[in-house]
Image (cartoon, rainbow, N blue to C red; front, side, top):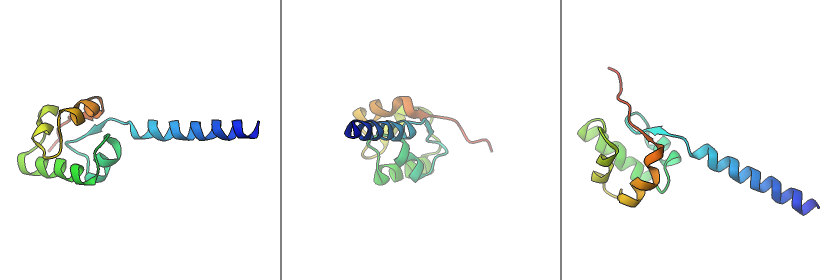
Length: 91
């Protein structure tokens, strides 16, 4: 019985961690760490490339622009499309 309770606790903790990470993120405002933490299959290197592209070309106008970022392909974009928000920064 004790093993069952331990397994249930582990499962609850794991599911909680997954739901924390699956938050929509505005890639026009997010920093490298926020992008890496919230998007799937995006580590620090790809997150930095996303920010670098934004700084060089301006804010993203559509999520398809992410395909122009080195290391971001169709499958990565498809995996994250529901987690990406595009809001412009008010000046």
